Image (cartoon, rainbow, N blue to C red; front, side):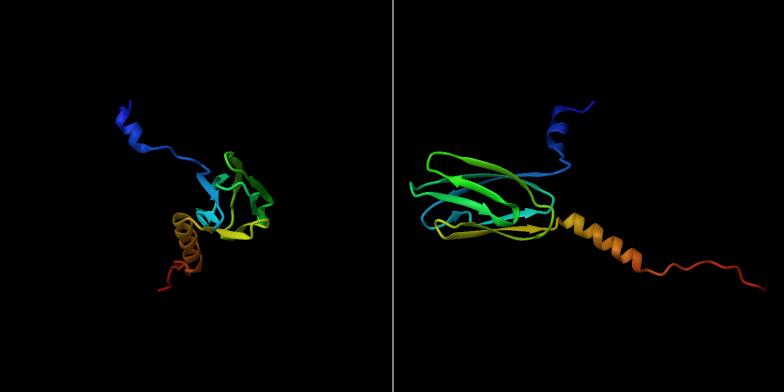
Length: 130
């Protein structure tokens, strides 16, 4: 049986990691205006505004639209399975930002290891005639 400390220090392991991110819409733009993720992560996005001016947050590549109202929080869950740069914007306010999705280093390392192993030539042992 594990002690409470050992269990606590192990942490939780997820098959599909989750990232919680809050975005605030202001007159100047999105805060933060760049969000970093690893591919395969689930993004729980929370959006609010500091102004009374109508605002929103859209992710065109993912067909996501969230209204940003002062004193209210809009929420969406999105999965980014492929690496790349995804634009976020508000057409009404003319503000832009981006979501940068990178391949996880452990996944990349394993993919490279598999590619290198497949390129090696295998020597086949054959008996010699004497």
